[in-house]
Every structure is written in structure tokens, then in C-alpha cells.
Length: 238
Length: 238
Image (cartoon, rainbow over all chains, first blue to last red; front, side, top):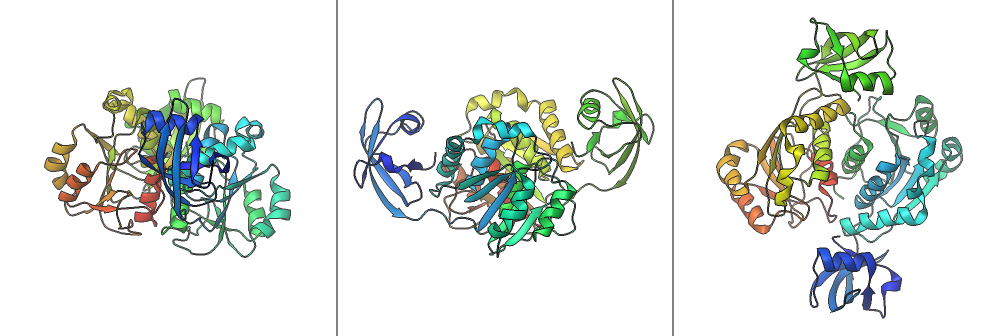
């Protein structure tokens, strides 16, 4: 928790917040915060700054906060990610959030097992919890928007043209000659397949929608490793 | 398992191998390999190629292998990594291996808890298991060399000058003005701290040894995310 993420309902007044529950416990038990300590804070979808602890009881901490700066810039990116298996889902959402992804579509693909869509971690509030952890890690406040799309073909045919309109359209695919471009400034839509990759039909459908296949070199990486590699190649200066 | 990694003792002759145990089970149960199928293979620290299955019983598979190509290039890098907590250690070794790290020192730091050094996963054969998984993932054969250094100061003062000699020396450290360089070709020694970072004393000792602090932007990333980001900024074309 490199930043304490504040929700509107934490505010007692424009500069006074009271925290209980998970954040209180982390501050009290892990950070051992005391009255007078200053900690980094930020408001969901708002500014970042410092909070000075004015009160600490057995179940809450009160702070006076001063919000002065903008959060880190978002990546100019919409990410289409084949739904990872449940074990990986939480971690992937946290990582993507920490890396600055703000628009994420979790999509279906042939190699996404049907059962993955039953994961309780796909509930809106569960996904938001993972986003909060990613923002707290990366000292960011801008909450990602996550959409679920359980049917590949209608998504790619009917929705994707509008979503990807005017952006550079890339699909990460090991079996291609074109390397992933480095250091682009352009708004980008990036599709990343499941473990085992998109099947040829899916790559074709994406190509029909204007997507260009790019590879990351001879190594085949797990999605959790490929994602930071892809994003830092595309946007190394972010 | 994108590559079946062969050990010298698997060979019955120069082109015949017999596999049992973990690899047999993966090929039989996950890949459902049958006689006649061709799979990607490689020899530890040697070439990669194809293996054709000639025999399959209830507990072994025999293949005729033909080794024709070099594995992916290694990164021109020596990585000094503060020992991660046990839960992260396995994953970090796998990721680093998959990314092409061949020289890895797991080092101590103030924020490395002493108990981490007791982890059974630090045994040589356990570390090697994780490297094998990383190589199988990344279609690589070159086994990383991993060294453990339980004392920070003697390592940095006595050993590091020789290890890092003639290389670009970088320490990943969020609190600095210099961004991590992009796309260098040079042999590099990169130090990455524990969760919470190196303490100022450690950064100073590394600076005395010629290391330059570099940051990855305003976001603070977990080691598992920072590592692929760092390596792909330094070596985007690998």
C-alpha cells in the first residue's frame, strides 16, 4: 500500500477523512502509523497528496488530507484480454491496473475454458477490489473500467470497430514476422490471447477488424509476464 | 511446456531419448501426444529441434530427436535480486528464466526478512526445477546460474566490482531523477531491491560500487511486474 486510496464516503468534510476496516488495519498493523505521521493519499478518480494522522483509536484513524497533484498518466490503451484462469485473474487485474491500464475488456476465446466465466472473482465488486490493490501499489487513483464479453464473434464484429476506431490495432501473437513496435505515442488497442494463444480463426477475425499481429521475440511468455513486457515496449516512457 | 527440455541422461543414443515421470505425464495427459506426433525439444545448454514419438507405453515415451537450431539469445545481463519472500521466489525465478536471465545473484538486503533464507525452495535442485519450468515456457535451453549471497556488504564490497566490471551498472530505485534507459546493447549489471526498496545505506554502497539509480516512472511496481518492465526497457529487441 504505497498510497491510501480514499473513497468519497470517507470524507467528513472537505479535508477530514476517517478510515476503518482494511485500510485502518494496514495503517495500524503494517505501517504502524501514529498521530502526526504523514502518509501518501489519493481520492478515487481524483488527486493525490498527503494525509496527516490526527487521531488513532482501536478501530479507526482520522486524517487531515491535502490533495495537490495529479495521479500518473494513464496509458493511451484499450486492452482486450482473453479471460485468464481464476487463479491468475486477480493477479492479472492487479498488474494491469498497476501498469496504468484504464480500459480493459475481458473477452472470450476458444482456449478460455467455459468454467472460467463462473469465477466469483468476476463480480463487479471483486474486480474493483483488485483494481484498488493495483492503484494502491502504483500510487494511482484512476479506477480502470472493466467490461466482460462472453462471446468473441459478436464482440469483434459488432463492438470492436467502434472501440478500436482511430487507434493502432495490435494482437500479440507469437506466430508472426512483425515484432511488437517500441515507443509509440499513439492511442492503441491491444489484444492478448489466453495461455496457448488465440486460434487461427480468432486471429483472422481480429485481422479482419484491422488488427496487426506482432510478436515479442523467440520466447513464449506467460500472459502475466507478456503483459508488462508488451506495455513497456509500447510505452517505455510512461 | 512449449519445449520439452532433455537432459543428457535421457539419451539412449545420439538421437533416441526415453522420457518418464513429469515430462511423460505432461506429454501423455496434457498434450495427449501419440506415436508419430512431433514436439519441440531442446537439450539443456544445447540446441533445439523436433522430437518424433516412436513409442508410448503406460509410463514412458520414446522419441527420435533432431537438434538443428540455437536457443534464443541470452540477455547481456547479470541480475542482482534481493531475495523475494518464499511465496514469490518460485514465480520470480521462473519469470526471470523465461525472460532470458542467465546470471542471477539472490542477495540480502535490510528489508529481506531473515526467515526468507530458510526457505526450502533455495535448495539447488529446487531452484533448478523452477529454471526448468521457465526454460520450457520460453522455448529456451540455457540454464541460468544462480548464486546466493547472504551478506550484502561483503558481497558489494568484495565480489561485485569483479562481477560488474566493464558493464553498465544500474540499480532500480524509485527515488531518483534518472529514468531507466531504453534499448541499450551494452552488457549490464542490474540490481533490484526487495518489496519496500533498498534502504539509503544500500543504495549508497551500490553507488560507491559505480551503480547509477534509475526509476521506472511515477508508478511503484511489485518486483514481479518491475522485472519484466525493466528488462524489456533495457533490451526491447531481445
